[in-house]
Amino acid sequence: MSTFLHVTLVTETYAPEINGVANTLGRLCEGLRLRGHKVELVRPRQGHEPAPAEPDELMLCRGWPIPGYPGLQWGQASMHKLLRRWQRKRPDVLYIATEGPLGLSALRAARRLGIAVVSGFHTNFAQYTQQYGMSFITRALTHYLRWFHNRSHFTLAPSVSQRLELQRRGFERVELLSRGVDSQLFNPSRRSAALRAEWGLEEDAIAVLHVGRLAAEKNLGLLKTCFEALSQNYPQYTLRLVIVGDGPQRQWLQRELPEAIFCGAQRGEALAEHFACGDMFLFPSLTETFGNVVLEALASGLAVVAYDEAAAGQHIRHGHNGALAMPGDEDAFVDAACWLLEDSETLRRVRLNARQHASRQGWNSIIDQFEGQLLNACAQDSAVPVKPVP
Image 1 (tube, rainbow, N blue to C red):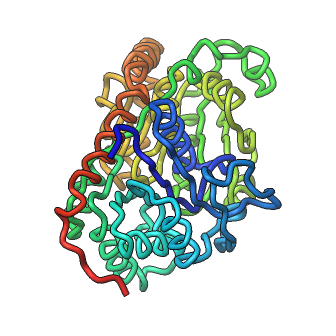
Image 2: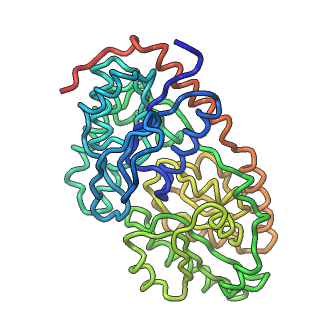
């Protein structure tokens, strides 16, 4: 096999969809291509997307909408189509990023053809079921996910805490592949007096920011509890809650937080400008496998308040470059946010340390590691016992 790989990436979400998985996969694809590898993308068609201009690099399949998640979809099972495609032009290795019907089709086709498979654990669906009142399927879903991932050469987890959790649940051969941040894009220098003026903020006012998908699994009720405590305990500050993002809980949040500013979904430089115009970042989610927005907030020079897990647990040292609470302890979360406002020097120091830390967390080393993991999977193609796939 040549030094350069033919990599096929299979996913049910991709840019321009706005979520952490799509963002991460875009970075990985771009990084591999810049290193000379051929990257083929297999994903559902988005909207009325036309046929690809370069069919060798993109295979589109039909998608089905995911209930409660407008704009996101499952990919249709396409095993026979994949078999025909890969028999003509065989990839060296697959990276399967999602475990839906399309991902399962790709796994079965690859194993039938003897192609190396690496899988990624990007979304904690088993935890989502509890948030949506479907805890009765949690055990079955966990069993399926374990079955799925244990049939790949490696499963790549994005954080140390997620890797430990998967190992505890019987997932085998779990390796770490963290995430990076573009610290040139997400940068305090993008702070805009004009945008802050639109929010009704003077220079010394404090913008309390949240960025993310507005959905039940993000634990967004804690935003209201925390912001009300900050406003009550520190009347000497002018505080404004700013929420960037969209999703099924937006209308509910707007009723619960009528004084908050809702900016909708943002991307690229506009998103970076919104980050840079904040001062404090509240991230109450308990279902993240990583949480890219935490690194983006740190790189933008925000003081992050989060639970001690996933990206926050990996990148924040409590009291130095952010504030952490034990997972699920809402009182401790509120106390951590309040500590940041005890005096202006604390907030200033934490924000400076946040930027300094995040500026060292680039994507190049992550892509180097990913490249090595794909090469290892190819080299060990016969090392993993083949288990029959129905």
